[in-house]
Structure formats: structure tokens, C-alpha cells
Length: 208
Image 1 (cartoon, one colour):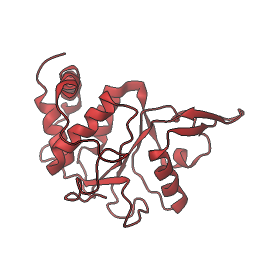
Image 2 (cartoon, rainbow, N blue to C red; image 1 turned 45 degrees about the vertical axis):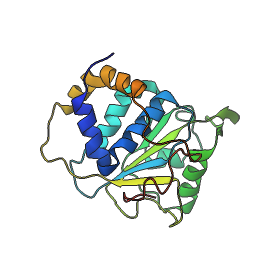
Image 3 (tube, rainbow, N blue to C red; image 1 turned 90 degrees about the vertical axis):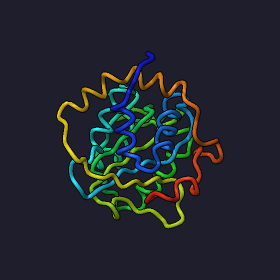
């Protein structure tokens, strides 16, 4: 629905900082090109009250059943029937200290097929188009990332200057206008790599 969404745009500026336009591109691609491979978005900060969890809750309101939350343990489990067919897979308070978990999420971020496995059932190969968003209060060691790795987009999120207890409800009211905005804006970057964005594009953030 056409309308204004100033709080939503301000929130994206807060989360993505200098990469505001790239953040809009990321959300626009999620909404308009859901099968497009995208970087693993990592939101980190030692500080409290940054809006990381609010960002995940807002995305849940937008994408509803196409988004699911995981814990560290549930991602480590061999059973994945609850998330293998989701668009967004969000893991809060991430702490992956095993290299095999890093390799698993790297593989899943670029594959288009995955093995769905449920308890008591045979494995089944299914199409996979999931995008991962990781949040952590550990800025440096939340996951083992090789220095030359280009699949992770790490952003340090600042704390909110003034807390607003009704902010999520305000964002929810703007969702129809925000989605209309995403449908009609021009993408700020072109499709240059399998993950759309390039390491050079994101170099000025604490990313890649």
C-alpha cells in the first residue's frame, strides 16, 4: 500500500549505518527476488539496546512463516525439517566455536539444494533458498571466519540513543508502505557476483 514509512527507513539507517542503500538493497532482494543468493548478514555489538533483536522481530512480522529462529544447538542438530524450507533463518546470540559449523553455514549460503531430515523419516533432497542472519554480542569470536572469506557481511550495530517501548508496533504499522517502497525503488547496486554484492562494495564496513 502506497504511503510513508519514515520510522522503517530510520531504523534501516541505524542498523546498516553508512551502508544504508546496500541494506535497502538486501531487504529489497529478499522481498522481490527470494531465490537470489545473498551474503550471511551478521549483526554484532558488545553494547546492549542496539536494536538487533528488534530487527529480527520486525523481519518476522514482514516475512511471517517464511522466517524462523534457531538456537546454536538446533542449527547443530542433524534434524532440520523445521527450517530447511524457510527464506530467512535467524540465529540470535550466536557462538559457533567449531569449524564444521562455519563450513556448514558457508555451504548452505550458496547451495540451491539441501537434505531435509526429520526424526524417524528418510532424508529428502529439497530446493533450498534460505538466507542466514546471525546476531551476537561477541564482536570478534562469534564464528570462525577465514580472513579471505567473502560470504559474511559483518556489521557493528551502535546502541540506541533513546529506547522507545512502542517502536516495534510503529514499525509494524508501516509494513504495507515499506513493502510498496521496496517494490518500486531502483536497486542501488547491480548483480555482479553469485551473492549479488561484491567484497569491494562492502569494504568500508567491518565486513567481509
